Amino acid sequence: MERKTGAQLNVQALRDDMPFLNDVTYLNSASCSPTPRPVIDAMTDYYRHTPINYRSGATPAERQVTERVDKIRARVAAFIGAASPLEVVFTKNTTEAINTVARGISWKPGDEVILSPLEHQSNLLPWLALRSIGVVPRFLTPNPDGIIAPESLEAALTGRTRLVTVHHVSNVLGCAQDISAIAKVAHAHGVPLMVDAAQSEGRVSVDVDAMGCDYLVSCARKGLMGPQGIGFLWARKELLESLEPLTIGSQSAEVIDFDSYVVADVPFRHEAGIMNTAGIVGFGRAIEYVTEIGVDAIGAHSRLLAEHLREGLARFPSITLHGPRSASQQTGIVSWSSRDRDPQALAAELYESGRILAAAGTCGSPLAAKFLGVPGVVRTSLHGFNTHGEVERLLELLHASR
Image (cartoon, rainbow, N blue to C red; front, side, top):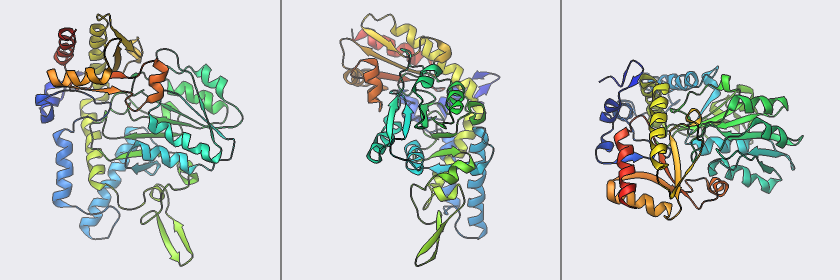
């Protein structure tokens, strides 16, 4: 069945690929999306017919697996607008990709890294941990909608700033940052920019050339509807070469003698050990799948649902909506809180009474909760497989529970 007809998303066809959705209203794609059948089938095919390690051996079957992964690396590069597949490093998740940059840069005491309080803690902890070697994290102040103004970055940059790192889409507020504007300010001061695109891939178009960033990290399991346990780091070749490998081992280096070894060329020096080959296969199929549907179609559908949900939630006097008020800055992630209900208790009640699965609490972004002045939120993240009927069901249950 076609998953897209013209510019219109065929939501039912998408849902038919996800049996998990048969008995649950799933509003948590900002954490992990259900995996569609074609992606599962691609991984199953790998395990059934060629369960062989990547870059291992020279038999026809071994060469087939290596060629397949190399093509997927090229697919990832093309999907994000990278100049070369050799600029793409496969990692186990976004967190490992961030740490590859954080631990790979040659820092000096007093060096600064600039970030925002809205980052997921996986883009907070690696930088906070660098304080042990004298690196100073400095924080920007977003506006109330969660948008980072280029002027605020201009004011924060100093002669000691070594890196700026920000999210593309906030995992709590769903706001999309103007990355190209942020990059221009950083580059005017000779400072590289790293972008956490974990929430934007599959929701909005990502083009590293147009964005002007220097590093980009992401994963397969969220908006791309791919498997867990696979992500990537993108950077230009010279930047990848300048990073000290996070880990070292087989495939990433070669022992010369008892006293020395030589590291492999990029990207392989950053891919120590045996890769999650099945995950890479699933990742490649997920990109194909999302491309077949159309990222723009998914984004447009998600924004319509988000607008529907925000309008409905705004009718409840006790509910406070967080994040961008403008639909153009919204990507389908809607967070809200109740003045008289604990968010986690409220999310638990939604599941128990209506099989609605949403996230609650700080959602991995404790500084974002502090920024909002709340102990936590209910996060309802929408995707191409969600429906207006599901939004109505959520609003009906909230009305009934008052």
